[in-house]
Length: 106
Image (cartoon, rainbow, N blue to C red; front, side):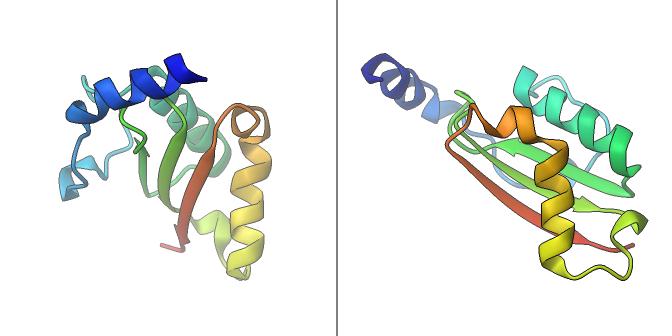
């Protein structure tokens, strides 16, 4: 556990800021493997109109922020929208500390 925390602290300097340019469906050159994997699963399942996946733990994969817009959420309450996302990422969630989800319909 100590080595994981230490690694996170070392990578904290490399945290990327939220920006409008990060609302892209394609992975950019600075995306982590975890971000790319989550982005691919969500894109396959929901065909989103916009999707942002960001490792906000400093790059160690402990905490992700996801913002997703998709017609698949149309007519569903927010709780069910979030449940769909968490069910899609069930295996990935087992290995992380936290997940922040924002969903919307477009």
